[in-house]
Amino acid sequence: MRRNYVAIALFMMAIAVALGAFGAHGLENKLNDHDMHTWDKATTYWVYVALAVLGVVGFIQNKGADHLEAREEVRLKILGEKGRLFSGSLVLLLLGAILFSGTLWLVATSNLTWPLLRKLGMITPIGGVLMIAGFSITGYRIWKMNR
Image (cartoon, rainbow, N blue to C red; front, side):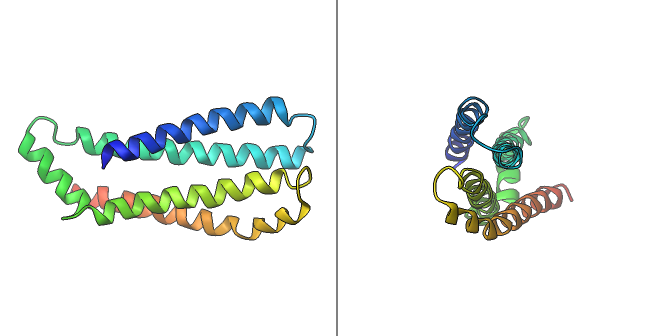
């Protein structure tokens, strides 16, 4: 499971670099300042989620590294018996990033493509709420683990 999340987070970072470069070089004279700021905001939050996933997986991997038994106990505390709670919070983060950043990228470029895409901005807050929930649940699980 950890390897899957690490791979997803690294692919997210690659996408962020590619879209950041595309925004800076391919869209710089095509988007107005507001749309360029929207593009940058989408890329920034995409990176935040990728870094958070990497950090959480790294934390779990290293917590209790001195003793294999302790590491297994910590893993079970965070992941639960089948890993559903922890996986669920990371899935919330990832879905939130897709909705939040994805809709912002589409809204930012809607004047170049299809102006009706701007209406997708109504979905953006749902992505934000999912990210907040994912960050909060993950933080709570880690905090509770140390109690």
